[in-house]
Image (tube, rainbow, N blue to C red; front, side, top):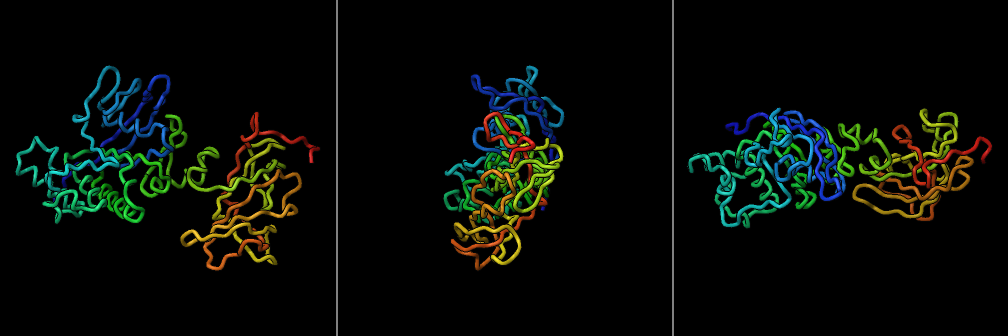
Length: 375
């Protein structure tokens, strides 16, 4: 099969800012995406990730800062290169295929610099790459959503972009199809060495495909790194909670540790008596029979969630370390077929090796410190 794409290019943002009135949608944003790398911009709606992508594409102009592709200035210092001259491909949630054109004609549409025969040849090469060659003469309405997305990918890759910009391209597909199409798409992009900037609000998607993840908050990067670093070493509670459910256990630091009903967690950098939040993911819990080891608790609710069972549990007050603030219900996710039922008493253990400790910020004035003689 012929290769139709060059190697990926480098995309660099340097202190990029974009304002809408008094609000900075993107605020001093800086990152370099290496050739062939996939960087995922992750964050909730309104955090600035789509505006950042649009600035890279040339669909928005930066108010300050610079955008460079392979070292060439695209936006900044009085220079603005329009989208069609940046050599980037674009994919959006809306496939935007022309309904009156056949699949091959859709893919060939942006190749006007080539002769008609060469355009169709390139279109067929790309359709081979995405497994859609047999649908070359079909119309978009004759295709499924996943098939339309593959055609949209072929069209985005047809002009030989070194960089592909993708804004929530899989969010319109049902979950099972989304996983398959996304997996196939990124297998192809890695094979071709294409540089990718992917915008997503789905942390699982970002962890599945991103070489690095940039978690955005109010137009800035709150944290950037590989998926494992983001999950295991978040910068704060908000970042931690973005990657999955958390149980929040309040404690006071004593002898450089945060004591809980399940053991103590190191808190070396925090002052003695500081109130902290110990964050424990639901998957860290083990539920034992009432006569086993662990803290005594009773089951409030039990429900199946796919291959797991989700339990809500309340610890017996006597299981809490002295002076521990009141604890909300705990949530545990267990791969069990015969889980305990509401009203049952159990013993609860937790693997604290991945527990996270942050100063408590929920009270007015931030974390409080317990006096040495306070009980």
